[in-house]
Amino acid sequence: MQGGCLLDLLDNSQEQADILIESEHGRILSIGKDLPEAEQTIDVAGLTLLPAFVDPHVHFREPGFEHKETIASGAKAAVAGGFGSVLCMPNTNPPIDTPERVEYVLQKSAEAGACRVWPMGCITREQKGEQLTDFAALQSAGVAGLSDDGKGVQHGGLMRQALFAAAASGLTVAIHAEDETIAGKGVLHPAAAKKFSVPEQPGSSESAMIARDLLLAEETGARLHLCHVSLESAVSLLAWAKSRGLRVTAEVTPHHLLLSEESIDEENTFYKVNPPLRSEDDRKACLRAFLDGTIDMIATDHAPHTEEEKAVGWLSAPFGMVGIEIVFPLLYTHLVSRGLMSLSELVKRMSLVPAQAFNLPASGLRPGALADLTAVDLQTERRIEPNRFYSKGRNTPFTGWMVRGWPVMTMVDGKMVFDARQKEVQC
Image (cartoon, rainbow, N blue to C red):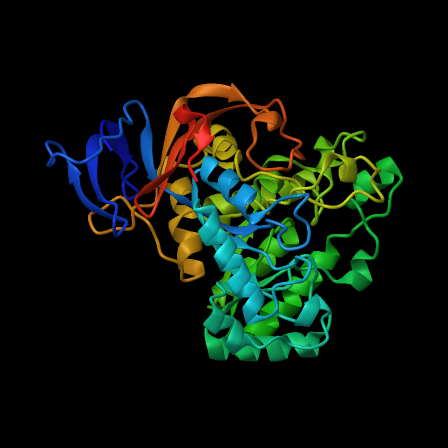
């Protein structure tokens, strides 16, 4: 790669340099100027070179819901968003609760030839919350961690057993924090629910389960990861856990950083997510926690649905929105460009930090590092247009937002898998 500006993750500086990549083994050979001549030269002048991102929470829907997304279409969307690796949640049909189903996801990922799709395995069989899966067998098959995302494990005793078993295996458990006895059929956070005359989902449904599982993690020594934190009270619990030295990490979504229940358009169910968009005070608390490091990383919770599924009203429409192709432009524009966070810190939280949390191979801009790279255009401002997405999903409330920081090229394992200048994902 020739002519790009390399971002130094230590001091946030950028310097123009070339990168020599050994494609056979997918590694960076050297970085600098006047490097040995390569077999192929890729011009990235005017672009900023970053480590490819890692998304710890996506839904690629396969098997069972291929009309919403497939592993292939989701992987194409991921590399278009600058991602080299994603962790795919197991709430498919059937769920990813056996070694054979783990192997299916890995095979489909290999066939897609885009980003690495790391499967998460179910905590409980068929996600019913009644009996644990075989953690050792799932680990041997290649899961990146364990989760029943889409549902919280409601039985505290079973979750305690799960965390003891996970601690023994070394696997991270990612929790969907929702006490269903509190959440009920809730659709929106209380103020918005009252405004639109739909059932409310109180924030206590999230915080109560986080409190329970943090206490269990302390008892068992398990590594716990909190999915899609959305509340000030959840942030306070997380800070408490970290002060006690618990092995806990947490993610926040771009929509919980940039939107609140005050943002919701009553006519647009693309705003319906789980956990729901919270109060403005909650949004600000999550933003502060992300900026100060209490919340460790960004996750998109990319959740594609068809327009027909989302068009049936607030009570029946499924939860979820897409975001993997627009997360970096959104956060670069609204955090970095506004001086709230440095570019290097945002990139670390979207690459190195999630990779470390789940023991994934980490890319980096140094000789010997994995050649998972993305080249982004920090100058060109463009409108978010879902009809340009590679994902099958178009369900985003960010349509029309003007943002900068668009990924232009993505390389995984030393191979070019996305080049916007060629108009197609190269798979």
